[in-house]
Length: 184
Image (cartoon, rainbow, N blue to C red):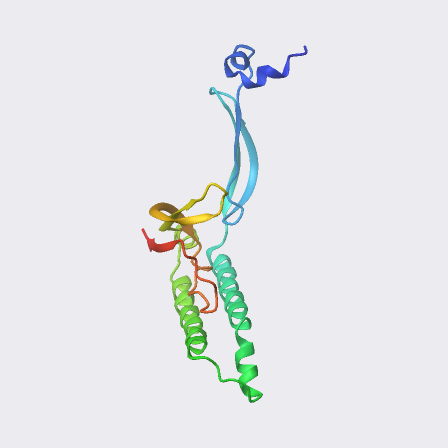
């Protein structure tokens, strides 16, 4: 039987032909190993589901610590040249850069302590998906599309991976639309 392609846009027609919508439930591979696949056709929708087994918490924590160390190496690597220049008799390391370097190591120690305290998969998932509210200024534009001004603010929910959330480098350009980011 050949049906016109338009039937796939009409759920009533599909239902009358005995064709059900399909959805699939796949566990997050970051936190779960996938297993056997099952299909349930008993309802109004066909649902495919993979069995899952939680990943080992200690293995996940070891990976999290590797991520922290990688972040520190990257952030310190971006500012190490200040010390190399100073060692060669050049300009001294600016105070804000020296403070930032110390802050990175302090944050590293804090994050390592926080990760050590995560003793369940749910706690790890929350740490890597922490609820925050971000407030930003709303930009308005001229008719030609160029920026005009900021007018009011808007809030939005965000999930932040705390492994990736660090104090900003003082040499980074400030986001003029940013107002605040607060944990929920």
